[in-house]
Amino acid sequence: MMLDTALCLERFAWHAGRHADLSVQSLALASDPAYVAVRNRFSATLAETVTCSDEGAFITSWGYRLGTTDDVESAAARLAFLLAALPA
Image 1 (spheres, one colour):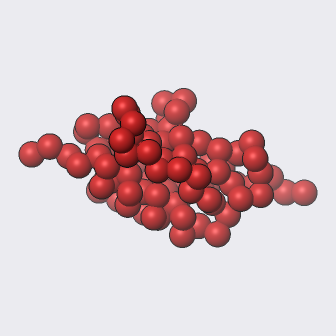
Image 2 (cartoon, one colour):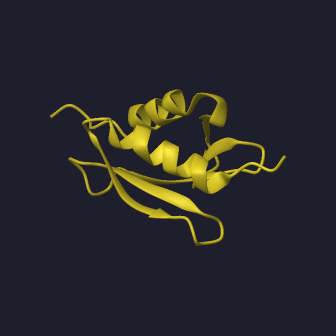
């Protein structure tokens, strides 16, 4: 059975958007590869693009594996940690 990566990215975007400090900038399901772009609400430079591999892993644009489709919430939380704003 083939993984529905678009559905997985929609779920990832939903979980990422639930973090108060994250903003989903775009969800590009028709692009190749499909991706979700997320940024820290308080910084224009703290941003990341996430794709979903055919094996069900969420991967950042620089190749970091955030987690799998088995635990989307934890993968989104890991991205929130990576994009956390630095203390003033």
